Amino acid sequence: GQRFVWATTMEREFTKIPASSVLEAMDLVVGFDDIKDAIAMAVASRQRINFLLEGPPACAKSIMLEGVRSAVPDAYIAFGSRTSASGLSDALFEFQPSVLLLDEADKMHNDVYSVLLGLMESGEILETKSRKTRGIKLDTMLIAACNSTAKMPREFLSRFALHVLFPTYTREEFIDVCRGFLSRAEQCPQDIAGVIGSAIFDYGLGDVRKARGVWQLMTEPTTEEVHRVIQLMLKYNPNGHKRTRSTQGSRLPGI
Image (cartoon, rainbow, N blue to C red; front, side, top):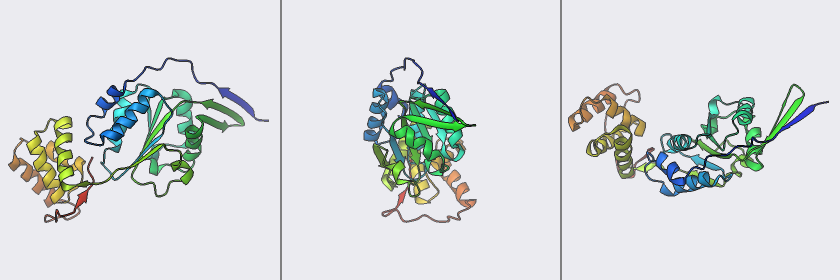
């Protein structure tokens, strides 16, 4: 018959992570203070609470995950497009993380859900290999991020305490996000960051990642240099944008 091995969680002292440390690590995220507070408090309390962050590309999801990762020494991050059920199971047995961060969750293989459902419901992981079964029980919270939940199983979605749907930004919000993000992450002057954000939005060139690209291509912090780089992007843009779009009621993903 099959052999069963039950591995208990390791006896170890987890370093207490203050909520303030988690919030500081997520400082690059502009806005969404209530969401950041909820995540920081959950991490600090060491409760097994699961969060799902859904929204368009570059809308703060990945930066929140990276913030938690930098603040929590024993956090483990996985990417849905590169994660198998056996690989995730092995990682959970080996690292026993207090926080599992799962980016690109909507790109997971279907078999990964079987591992996550047990982890989210009871903390138990069961695995059978070569007629040998092993199990472990963890106090691991899951923070997952995805672009869309449309194809995710209902039983998976129901296990999240908080499912956040990030809205896309208005023009004014997008410019404000560019000011905050570029000034904090890239030391870009806020007035120049605002000019970059306006141009990116009005020409429909992309999201805040593209705004960062404009700043990185600039040789000096001037409005003229912003326009030079924007014109370069427009000239060779594969999407063929040649003119500004209406800013009335327009929305574009931010960060």
